[in-house]
Amino acid sequence: SIFGTPQYTLPVDDLGGFVPPSWQHGNQPVPDDLLPAMYLFDLLPSADKPTNFSIHGVPYTATLGPSGMQSDIYLFLQ
Image (cartoon, rainbow, N blue to C red; front, top):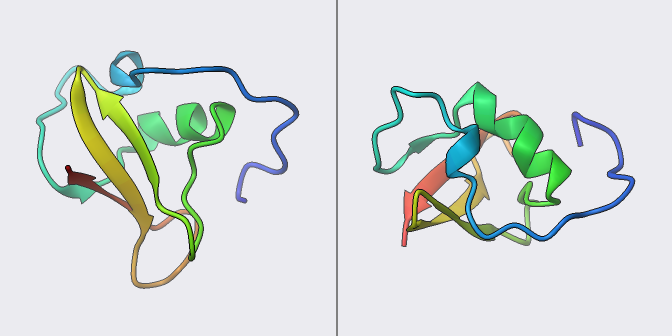
């Protein structure tokens, strides 16, 4: 991970508090503001494991982009 190894994980239902005020729902690259929260809650995807969470009540799946790097994450509406 680009953020190191998580020390612990906390339960989370919704990451809406971590997206920028200009957030618009839809399929898109993950905003930089959201990456630290995804790390904190152990929601960074890996090559073989997408992750699922909500943003303002809307369900998303996060996957690695074509480069396969942790800094290349895409969000898809479920």
